[in-house]
Length: 245
Image (cartoon, rainbow, N blue to C red; front, side):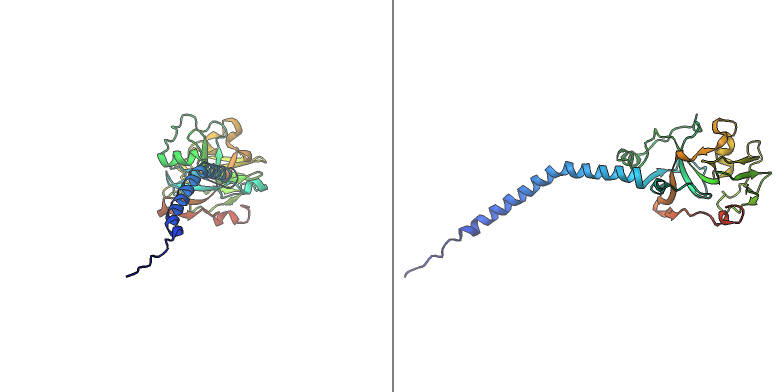
């Protein structure tokens, strides 16, 4: 009985080998492109850190109850590039203006923070930065008498952000003051009034407690970490009062 044989589909036999070669080519291509992708990611991270946003870790309790120690905040660095100036009520990060951090222990970053610092999304532990609330800007008169209230241009501020149990003004010598902020400077105070080494306690040093606007890194706008504390950081309504503007 005659039998017929089907022609061998040579193309079908070769196709698996071609697919294998294509997979290998794609794998080699990926490893060749990986350094470029990493480089692009680092450049983007640097651009974001320089011009847009940067994360900062809160090193102390001086801004409680608004910010707790070890919170991570995102700081808006973009608007200052367009000429925006710090405004009353904003929480700002700024470079140490006159050795305010002398004698303070340096923060010990964890692995996560070191990683972010490596790619520029967080400052390194060697950078000397502080975070406080802007109370007065150039031309303002800021005053504390007795336990308070704190006054700006003669207008008493209602300060719901002050740490519970604290008074708006401290009754020690440096906590009693009346100052006029020079143009191009800001007067800053921590929300934990009795535990903040701020403008009040540098009045006898260089700059008399004033922070040059040029040292302001940016405004803290969001609590980004931990997740349970996600929140924005708006300007309190008390700074919209007539006389406090």
